[in-house]
Length: 337
Image 1 (cartoon, rainbow, N blue to C red):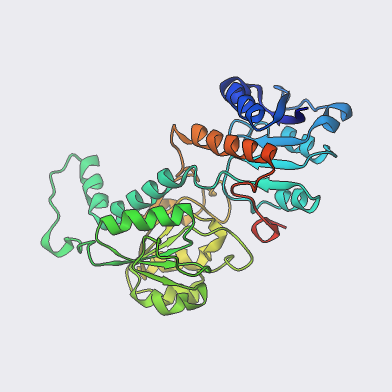
Image 2 (spheres, rainbow, N blue to C red):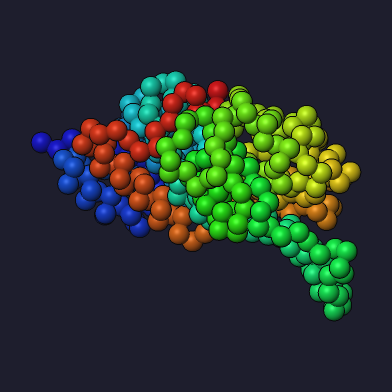
């Protein structure tokens, strides 16, 4: 007899992907029954409905409008055993509380790796090439070639250090190598030989590679170890004119120290998708800096993300019913407390 699981999910997501997902569950020997999140963000499921929930999917269409309604249901679901989330980062304390209940959590890590990496590399190219000058000239309808004294250095042969070699960091490294950069990867786990890097170092050796780092790309999760990782001392270890690319979390960098270094020219520039406070306050000096490019924690934007997330979740649904290890499962050290 097929095992029933009740999935908390949005009606919109189920209408798009539910038939295929339910079919995969049946093929794996189970039956997946949807329980729809209320369409009204202020509405809440009653106690009997919450008691039916065994699985939950925090899909992209939940955030941010329905987040409170979704997590109210999750927190009030005593029989919940597995939560899948559309994002890769689970540093929000809400996930720590859910994991502490014994609920398994999986992420969609890898689903947005390519668009995020492409955005990070585009930020690097904006800083490496004379786009600031060209855009300024265009705004004035001025035909102003770059003067000889401002011709930029070749990217080829420069060094990029990528902190975090998960799906995003690995894709940044792969693309950077295509531009001829020397790539240093920073991660805890030892080399397997498959990494798209020229060197691989442990985080304890980060200080040793910073003095030869022209581009510092941050793609690591936010953990107690990475919070404030790039502080004033480490910024001072970078060569004058080095640039920061941050698609990790704003708290990985000491933002005040970075701003000071950008203002003095010690740092040549930055591409920033994440910030210590989000939305970035209007009074932040980062808005006015000509050597800073900003995106509103939106570097992942791509039309294919939803389908990629759905594919990861569907694979895990089949694994769940077959009793196999889940893809992208997180542990206590990965989530916020």
